[in-house]
Amino acid sequence: MKKVSIERLLTWAFAVELAGWRPEERENLGYGSSAWSIIERVGALGTRIDGGTPLGQARREEPQADALIAADAVMGLAARGGFDVAPGWQPFPEWHDGHGLVAAEVARVIEEQRLRGDIVNGDHVVTLVLSSAVLGHGPDWEAEEPFAQPVSMNGKPRWFVKRKAKDAFGRIYEYEADGRDPAKRRPMRGAYRKYELTTPVRGAILSRLDWQLWQDALVHLHESLAPRLENHVLLPFRPDRQPWVRLVEAA
Image 1 (cartoon, helix red, strand yellow):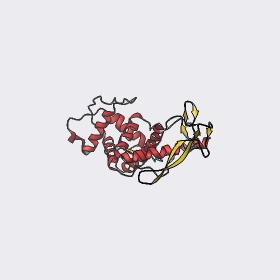
Image 2: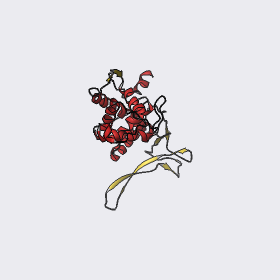
Image 3: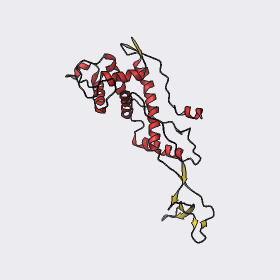
Image 4: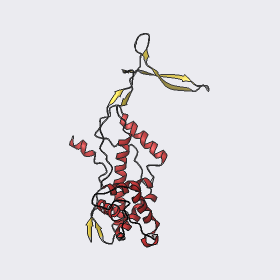
């Protein structure tokens, strides 16, 4: 029995054993259609791993049983629920967010993903686990901190004020208007500045979300595969859900 980490087991299964394997009859699998589906998706990734079989290149020998067992377990993630984000999730503790712009953008992106169903979409998690195994590493969570700058027009920071008005039904609503007095050429009483981020952070948010989804998936796969493997013994796995926290501790 060979001792191996869950990450190395998956890389071995998908980048070596299942890469390019094309049996003539699916019935030879012995693990049902789910294992075959995962093999087709591995081939669709079209990525070459150093030291492994180039994906898409045919190989003759049958993959080892543990590789098929791993494929079956990974495909099972598609039907598993519970991949969601806790309320108030903030994945950038190392960033300064004095104006709350990063927190607001995180909330917006997560709500967008939740409405689209992407967060709880098990199929996305399957693809995430597959790509990480084939590439040999998890999602890239490192990101450059953006800065806050005043909302400007023609290179000059703008001023804003709150106004109230009535709609056609007599209901009062609030809106935002230009807060600069054109006659006096100065801000009106109660005027305020608004700020925006210098660079978008949507990609960084989704990358850190993917990292945590990947770690949660590894926990589930470790528990699922540990009693089922025939020729491997899984080493203990401790998820590293927030590696970016170490940046705060280092600072």
